[in-house]
Length: 315
Picture 1 (cartoon, rainbow, N blue to C red):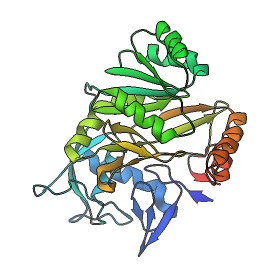
Picture 2: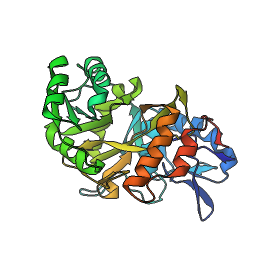
Picture 3: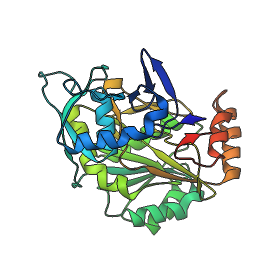
Picture 4: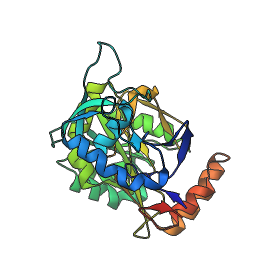
């Protein structure tokens, strides 16, 4: 049994001197078995308006500046450094106890574009997404792995969005880069046709990108909640770096990732993408990915996707 982090839900712990470190959100704990009690302590400190782990360290846990930002965003708080020299990274991943002012985040307007990678067979999903999120984003663009005629048919059903087309050709990074170029917005949320941003993420988008701009961030990793045959799977948080500045490039034909310096990226745990799958498609995807690139099938991912979610641990 591997206990999940009470901040991000990850179950992978690294040994770092006298600590166990969450490999996702940077939470450090003395004893992983005590991790469930940590979240309440962190929220209480964030709610006080000042977190100073240098002068007032916690007994059982620690967060460095980058880790504190991860936790703050997860629990709906914005944070600002207590002191910073001009040109310094505002929340460095430096393993020093964090110091920051905190305040509850509030929903603010934004000008983010929504980009959707899709196939002609996804036409009904595209119409649903375009209709449901029509006023939620500054611009909606679909990049269709199809023909001009197929793109035109979809565009006729949802004329308020742009539908471009280009063959995927087995290169997910290349397709995402084309979509980035088509967006014409500073920030882009990219989704696939079987993904939806949940309400919490929609409400947080404005303050997340405003905070990212203040902190010099260009790429944000979002949790993805995988629903297989309608049931949440054990594959969580399944971080996807999908909220990016439009100048970010992706790399990797399969399991693509943004090319960005580590200090210009961060987790953004406020809300999640919901990913709707069926069990047979999960099994098929493993075979397809392996055929596209050796090792990309990741049978361990399939096993997690087909196992039910347990909020406490991966068993």
